[in-house]
Length: 73
Image (cartoon, rainbow, N blue to C red; front, side, top):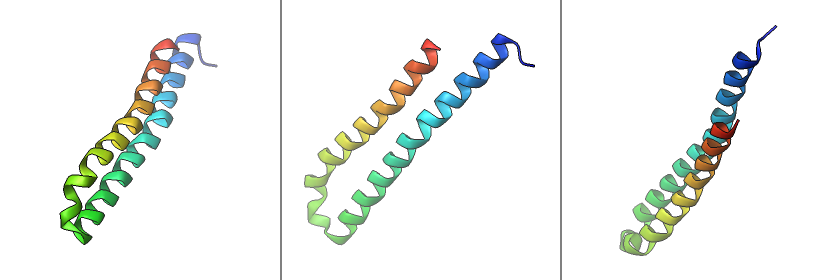
């Protein structure tokens, strides 16, 4: 049997792992698609930069929520 402190550490680890993998995949996907789009149409680089950064920032906000939940636990 696990004591309470050990169980809390395991739960915190699982929480941040699950809460971090989704945003990590999302940021990678956003970056890959932006680079693919710029590769197909180099003139669109200036138009894609700001929406790409906003999408990455919103995806990273989810990871920050997971971090906050981990600290609360």
